[in-house]
Length: 520
Image (cartoon, rainbow, N blue to C red; front, side, top):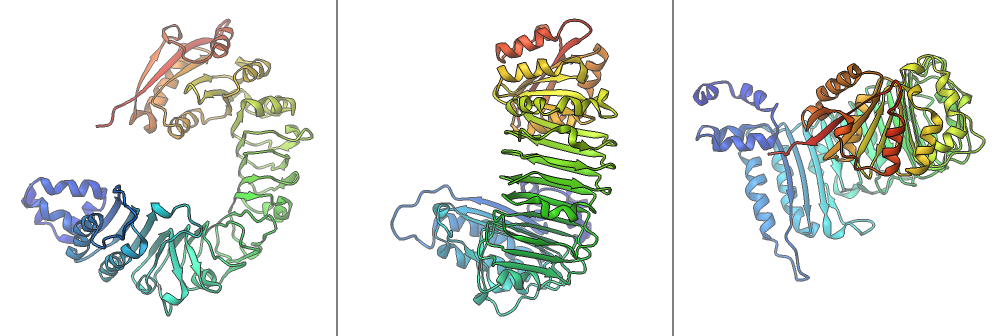
């Protein structure tokens, strides 16, 4: 079999191997003497290197054992390959950057000489993480004149204007700069304007960005993600081809102009702080997808749009309120974990056609929401009878899944929230399985019980099968459907009292026990 595989053209072998992770490719070298060389022609290199050795206060040895290990693996892999498609390097070390720089320059030179099309570089100096600005690796000029590069992803690097004469990346389509530092006048502006084929641009929490940024004449740019600290005072985007724009800033006074983005379809205000969102009202009118994750908003704002199809609102602190008039909205997600304005009322929301809703509250915010007309708003939905409750306690890692909204009263849940202040309460239409899976993953849950309050044993069996077929559960958990009486409740007395009081009458009770499989 090995001989037959080796007879294939090298290009076909590379294509087959490219579907496997680099870690799995490396393991094949122990299969036989044939496979010992096969992995060396794998076109994609993904190195994640951690230096756990402690350093004293003496002068560092440039021939540090960590560098020797990296040279033996990464350096030789780069040198032995005739062709390299992708190179991803992440190094976490306590070594001084000046000690690491000559080696890094050499490895990048080897990769770029092999016509690499994707380069990902993340160098973390764990000794100097607390420094501002941190001591970071300075990217050499050869990276910015690599004509074959299509994807460039730099994290925690320094880009100095005096380190290169020009920027010439004619085939670059995707650029991502995260936690980088720019040294030079308007250097970020010059970099952004240098790539004619740019399709995807991401700039996140960099330093030395400058006071203004103008992006225009990018005929192929479709996605732009910009998350700034507080340096920008003005951002102007004049790109008719732009489809998705994401913006976050700590500078509430930053002026945003996207009027030239005539084909904008998705707007994400992701992490704006203290900004008056009324300035975006004219933009809200025309876009189909809107996400707002804002903090310390000074006042209530309004979203009025005939075009809006999907809306995501996240209130992580005091929520002043929002008026929504979106007659064609189909999907709505809302999250509230803190207090909300006493003047706000959910009945000010006009979303008559919404078909898919997910709303998440903390115990405190749920009680406040009940006083702000949440129940009346839910009951006005055209399909409210299909809504269900999900209750999650992150302390005990247990769930309660309630099939029908009307099976449990709002007053009962409000009382439960008063006694159990750590719980989260979710109202969901259509997405109860995905919401449970999302919570399982986000909280790294090892063992949990999902208590069911439902109309029939058939629903319990159906929910159990759907949950078991979800990849997040099927691939990671052993799943068992049992009667509620067989479950040893680990939650609070208030949790047990709530289950007991809602186990009478027409309600049927069951439980699903999940145990995470041991990974071998």
